[in-house]
Image (cartoon, rainbow, N blue to C red; front, side, top):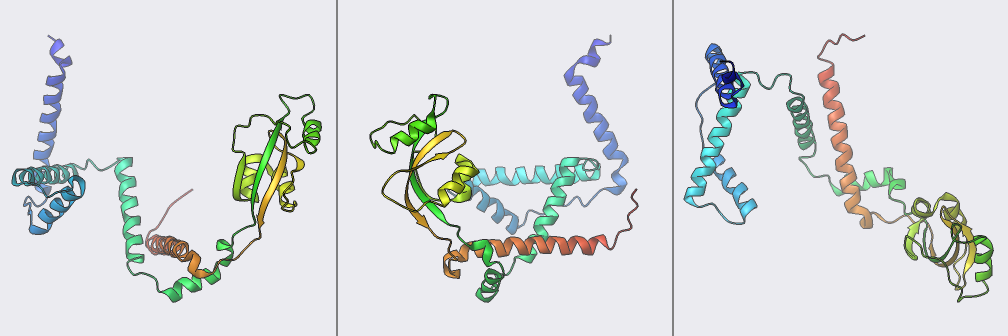
Length: 264
């Protein structure tokens, strides 16, 4: 007799009945039951379909889009009426995110003037400074494969035909900063490379995180401060990001002042 309780269909129908009963108890607080699918909504559905499919919807497809919108709207309103949004961390985070987006959109609704961007660039010039950059080739001598990799590397300075060992990364690098070289080979290698002068001959050996290397430094570009025109796109993006952060911070502080908070 109790096996029917384990039937998924019976359980589903029971859950549906419970929700329906709850809906009946809450009818006094029912929201507006008029769903107005106006021209603006039809246009939005059409544009969304067009963006996804690359063509306007047929009459049958449009009818399906409208019916899907109506179903979604009904479910949304009923979910709110039943307070299904309460206690849901995903819904909570999404609402917070949406409020942040709204604040940011208002803050960035007007494009900054060139004067504002230039002033921002001047105030943050260090952010756009290009560090010294190095272009080099290297020959690798593995401490795992050789008994004395450093000595072999030194001997190879006199023998341009001397073979190095296979290396897991590239053999040549172009216009890499000292920091970028350090990320690949280790800080001591990058620091040693930075004090070399460009020359047609192999130099070294330099110690890396992998072993020893002979280096042919082909070019060393000095640190430079590019003009505004060359970094205008970056400046605009940074200016907008900072304006968004400031808007969110100001909006939060304004809201925070309206709340009384009890905390340990």
